[in-house]
Image 1 (cartoon, helix red, strand yellow):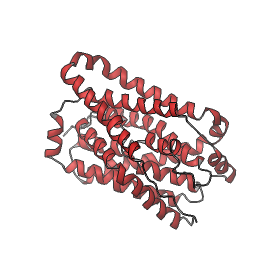
Image 2 (cartoon, one colour):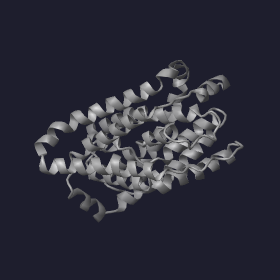
Image 3 (cartoon, helix red, strand yellow):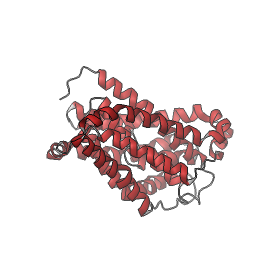
Image 4 (cartoon, helix red, strand yellow):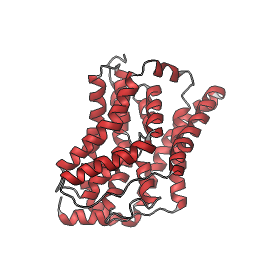
Length: 316
């Protein structure tokens, strides 16, 4: 990537006011509510009777994805800026995205496993997100020959509480209750709400970059390639772990989607809603990588889910 392009990318500045961030949080909550409309309490019991797939999912998402992301970033040294690499590592350090549950449903995957993995990875985010970002970010900085300290990534307790309870817990509970006691309402709302949520979220990301549209258009083809490779790696890790682990094919689908769909909205919230990265040099690369992930993993997730949906492979 040409130095002038890298400089253009890192110079991009995006800010959201409190209202904008609240809107994103509400959209994420609606996504989770829409997914939960098809869930009944009894399904979780079966998942934890056979924990193998859950453990493999945690290994894939919390350990292997950040580690392989660091390796990929090191291999791309000289082609991407350190801030773009740190954006990749931040995305990999985030928990699974709520929209993965919808993708698993569309792809005829194990939706119960999907929801369980999303819930567990989100609950562990208070520890694993800052640790993985610091650990693999430090390793990248060392092996890539980048000098400078990485600020400690501390997720404020309230942000974590909102992510776990408000964005995941409350919508999940309300969705399950709606499905259990108002099945006709759940059936009516489920698909329209899920699709509307996706459209609105994409619109929010686009609007966020509207003030930097020229710089974004110049760099988008480079950003697209970086995110494409990174997301393909994530999807491949999930499917490979499921295959090596010899779990049922429905679970392999779920592991693929869960590892390939990250909560990039949390990454954006950490950068735009806090002062965590005040000590960094211009970090437009981190913002653009994280934001484009928010768009691209919807496209890739829908593509993979559709392929799985059309697959004749036995769901055993």
